[in-house]
Image (cartoon, rainbow, N blue to C red; front, top):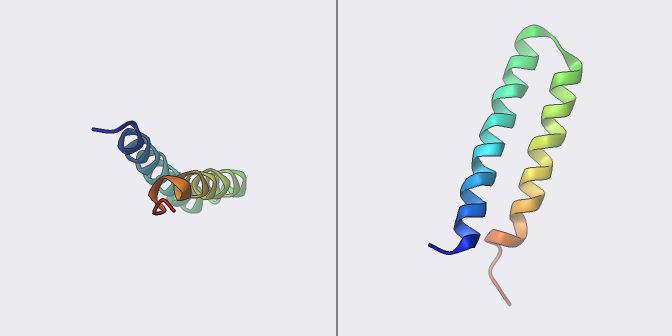
Length: 56
């Protein structure tokens, strides 16, 4: 398996964890957890874009 796929799998795990933290933050009404988790998840998605975009 190429290194790129290991990175994608790891980032998917980070995104899932970020979504779980968003849900927990909403459950407990912790706005700092929600904001931090949204930033974390968005950053992981942005990081993943060049890995999944077709090469030119």
